[in-house]
Image (cartoon, rainbow, N blue to C red; front, side):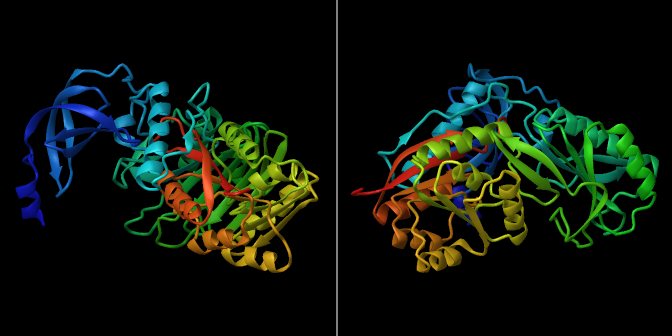
Amino acid sequence: MIGLAKVQAPVQLNEKIEVVFDDVTHEGQGVAKVDSYPLFVPGALQGEKGMIQVTKINKSYGFGKILDIYEESPERMNPPCPLYHECGGCQLQHVSYEGQLKIKEKHVQDCLVRIGKITDAKVLPALGMETPWRYRNKAQVPVGQRNGKLIAGFYKKRSHEIMEMDACIIQQKQTDETIQAVKDICARYRIRPYDEKQHKGILRHIMVRYGRTSGEIMVVLITRTKDLPHKKKIVQEIKARVPGVRSIIQNVNSKRTNVILGEETIVLWGRDVIYDSIGDVQFAISAKSFYQVNPEQTKVLYDKALEYAELKGDETVIDAYCGIGTISLFLAKKAKKVYGVEIVPEAIEDAKKNAELNGITNAEFAAGKAEEVIPEWYQRGVKADVLVVDPPRKGCDPALLETILQMKPKKVVYVSCNPATLARDLRILEDGGYKTTKVQPVDMFPQTGHVEAVAQIVLRGN
């Protein structure tokens, strides 16, 4: 296969070539073509001209690196983060924010056409933030050791080497300050950082959650062992140094794994939750809760989902993949009845508590697989007028899509975090009698290549 690639590719490994970039991917890689052979080059932008060096060759495409840019795009910016090129957490800081929104809109459009073969749905301009910085309300940073000193930060691009950092400009400022305080306290009490190669040491990660509307902070110390030396003193110092802290948690993860949180969670001080609001809906957030990391844009996303549901007040709505009830509770304020289903039992318990917290009585939640629970509801006579899905990146389970086609709700609202699987699933629904009317990209993660989208799908003939 390597020999074949060398024969077919019109470029040689390490060759230096002058190119013009005619496209850019959503991950911030410029695309240049040599005799129709695409070369992907990180950091290059559409319309730019420059010199690159070929770094890798595959049969049908290759990769390169920038040596020099002669003609720069007007969208090019100097990344404000000094660690941008090393970190890998952001992919688009070198692009103006207007340019980022255009890239994300185009990515959604391209996926619909290329993967879903959907050409007649209206893709609207991506909805962005007024200030696309300091938006993340949760940070979880690995802890390690360098020259005998405890360090915390993020992994270098494509590695497990920790880069120590004092601040991340897409994290809330309070989150950064809390991480630094907790790191200093743990270092002073000589808490041994975890060594993943040896599977020794104690402190694996520091997690901080911040309620943007409440100002409440949760600190989670993720440890390899249940034993945490100087536990009481550490708690007292965190309370003294972190304004707004309402919850200090220890999570024990004794396994050799890349999964951050373990099974056992211990409240060291305060509550087991903090509170935050999206619009007029309040949420209790635990250490393990799935809660959107950009609540400002989550409100934009959910408002759009509500708009696309076109509820009049007498509808029955099913929310598949309901999580802790975030979308369900928004829908319940406008619908007659909402049924939410989620595979994670703890999330369903959170959803029930959140419904109670908000005085919402017309929402019912069940734990299980959507493709199993929804047919059971159907047997009981539950007929959805509107079905909302907000699946993980892998998209909807095929059995759920089949269930939707059998139930035939008048409208499906699809909230997606992956345009590729959105397009794939829309094709299945279209082939089963539905039509995609419009798709709204929403920028939940400025400076990164990720984009969410809300699609409205209606049953043909209705």
